[in-house]
Image (cartoon, rainbow, N blue to C red; front, side, top):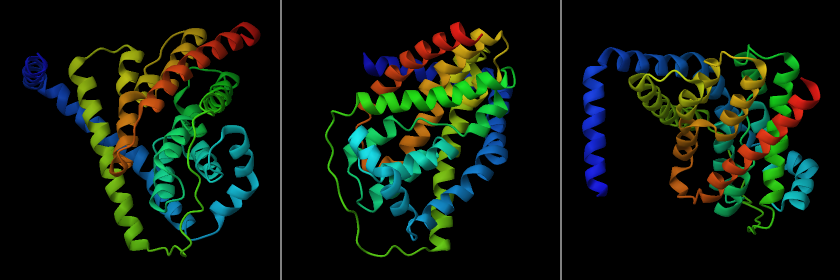
Length: 288
């Protein structure tokens, strides 16, 4: 039965690719342009900087100042503070790169990585402010702060899950610009593949509803919102909670060598959705 469904899906996609070839090409070009003009310029320098940070004591400073509170409150390694601090300013999928750095240096284990990832579904504040042109500035701030608050609640909900703590590698980590650039390009090519794939799928199905588009690619989905502020807030909350298949596969692509169990991450996205919708309802009742 499974093979029959796969065969039907293959034939359906093949027919759509042939029938809607112009739309498919436009979707692929749009995905490449999005990667070229938006993601590459913003993510590439951050990938280099995150490698450079490993050769400094920045992670130690953040871990010692903020990390002890995260360890007590959320029951996660204190180095997680570095991931959450950086992810707040850079968003997804950069959060996965910071987690990978800690995994590469044996500072955290796989369970810790998933716990941190589950509460690090954050987005660049400037990106949210830029793409939500249909919202007032007050509502834009609500989305940024509300999403952060929901992530912290996720951390509290998952607190009971035990993970191993490690002091990490004792060796001095040297920085190589050549290796860092090579690794950054490989990561960005993986991200490009995810964006183009889901951009192409969106283009051939031609359903222009923001939530449908947002299932595949969140930035494109939010940019299509054209409704009143109340409905727009609920749509944004749904898409920010889920993140879109494109971001999920970008994250999984960055962390692919560790074969993590993403069950907790998926469950956290559902919980995040309900929490954010409740928070949005309260905000609307009190301030709109």
